[in-house]
Amino acid sequence: MYWIVGVLTVYLLGLVLIAWLSLHPIRIPSYLSPGSLGAAQQEITVESDGNLLRAWWVEAPNSHSVMVLAHGYMMNKCELTPEACLLWKHGVSCLLIDLRAHGKSGGKKSGLGVREKEDVRSAVMKARELCPNAKIGLMGSSMGAAAIAFAMGDDPLLADLIVLDSAYGRLDRAVNGWWRFIGGNALAAFLWPIVIICAPMAGVNPFRIDVAHSLAKLGLKPVLFMHGSKDNLASPFEAQRNFDATPGPKQIVWFEGCGHSEGRWEQSTKYQSALLDFLSLHGFC
Image (cartoon, rainbow, N blue to C red; front, side, top):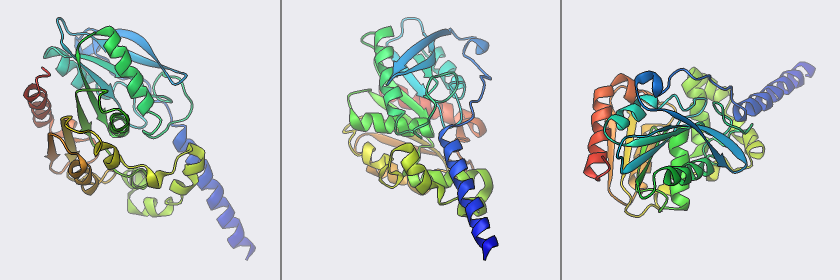
C-alpha cells in the first residue's frame, strides 16, 4: 500500500515539475540570421507588456508592406528567417521577434500563445513606426500562429492579412499534442494530466482557449493556412476546423506526408510558391 502511495506521489511531483518547465522553456540560441543569408539586418527592441523583446528589422528598399513574423514554442526568431529573406527579396520588409520567454527576449514564463498576442500587437505598432502607411501582414509558426490569431481576434484591424503555419486549435489539445509530438501516444497518455496542472500556473483555462473562436471574428481579412497532412501535434482536423471558422477570403495548403511545421523544409518550393502567390493575390508584394 505504501509503495503505491509513494509511486503516485513521485508521479504527481514529476507532473508538477514538467508543467513548470513547460511554462519556462529552454532558450534555444541563435543559429541563423537574415544577415548571414545576405539580407539587410538591424537589431532592435520592442517593448511589450513590460517585457523587452529582441527583434530583427529587415528593411526592403522602397517597401510598401511589412510582414511581422512570430516563431513557435521553444524556438526563436531564427525559425522564420529563410521566409523573411524570401520576402525581403520580393520587396517586403520584415520584423522578426523573439516572443516572451524565448530567444533573447525578456519574460520568464511562456503563455503558449495566449499572452504572446500582446507581443504580436506591440510588434505591429513597432512596424508601423518603422514603415508608416505600409500594409501589415502577420505570419506565424505553431504557437506564433496561434498568438497571431488571438491578437487578430481581439482587433481585426491590426493587420491586413495573415499566414498561419501549423496553428493549433484548442489549447488543451495542443498541450497533449506536444507530448505526442515528442514521444508518441504512450507519452501523451502518461502526461495528459499536465494540461490540468498547467492551468493555474499559466493563469488560463486551456479548455476554453480556441484559435477557431478568434478566427471567426476576422471578418473579411485574407488568411492563408499551411499545414502538414501528418501533423501529430496540431492535427489536420484542428487545421480544417480553424479554416472552416474563418469567414473571409481563405486558402489552405496541405503538405502531404509532412509533420508539424515541416512543410516549409520538406516541400520548400511548394511552400514558397504558395506564400508568394497568396501575397501577390492580395497586393502585398
